[in-house]
Amino acid sequence: MRILMLLVLYFMVMACNKPNPNPELSDEIYSDLSSNAEAAKKDVESEKKKLEGFKKDLGAVVPQSGKIKYAQKRFFESGANLARLEQQAKFFELKAQARLKYTKLEYLKAFKDGKPWPTPEELESYKTYNLMSKKDPSWDSRKRVQAYEKENGIVSAVKPKAEGGKKAEIKTTEK
Image (cartoon, one colour):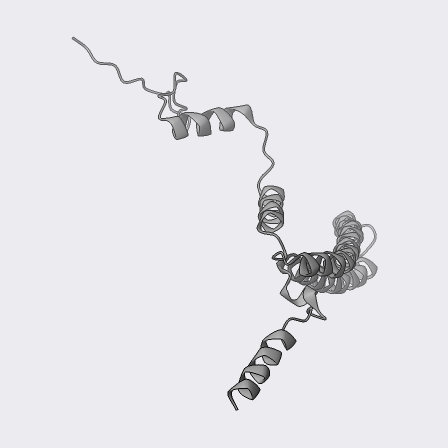
């Protein structure tokens, strides 16, 4: 009886070692790309509605009033924004499809080698890339110098800016 129980237990443990048929469901990168694609599609739909409204406004504007230029500007800017959003939606859709294929191949390789998947390095790299791409790409040297001085506790040699058009007062100590 004990042998039978041990055999059943052994087969249960060994039977659980199968590859996941849908590894993309556990992939954070794929889910992030898919959610970005869905959000971009929603943005495209809302921009299409705005464009239709601007088109109606453009048709209703009296030609020789000053409002036609404003209506045309809104219409053409909305059209350009729609084109950009459609391109962004297509990008995320294609990126998610490519990640799906990559996920299936890499998961099987990692499963055969007995390694964890996705690798922590890959996740960290993706998160860092996303953080850097969403950060303000400001190249203003003054801001960078001020941030560096603040981080390192350096007292600035630059005179403080005056607020409200008043002259800046430099504090001096008299002996």
